[in-house]
Image 1 (cartoon, helix red, strand yellow):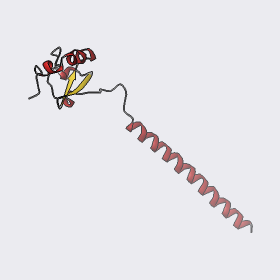
Image 2 (cartoon, rainbow, N blue to C red):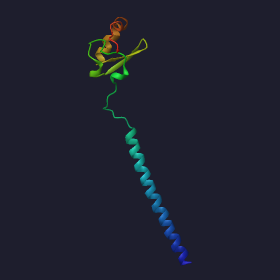
Image 3 (cartoon, helix red, strand yellow):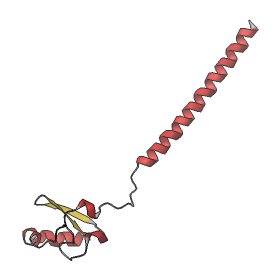
Length: 104
C-alpha cells in the first residue's frame, strides 16, 4: 500500500511540475507573439508607396521626404507633408487636383 502511495505521489508531482512548466513556456511564447504583432505608435504612418502623387499638391515637397496626412479624392490617394497643406488643398480641391504632379 505504501508503494502505491509513493508511486502515486511521484506521478502527481511529475504531472504537476510538467504542467506548470508547459504553462510558463506557453505564456512566454504568447507574450513574444503579442510583442511582435503590436504596431509601434512612433512608426511611419504613410509612405510614398501608398500615394499616387509624386509631390505635395500644395507646397510641392516630394512625398518621398515624408507624408503626414492623406486624402482620397477622385479615386486617387494624395499625400501631403502636413495637415495644413491638406487643408489648403481641400479649400479648392477641384482646381488643385488639376495641378498635381503624378508618379510616373
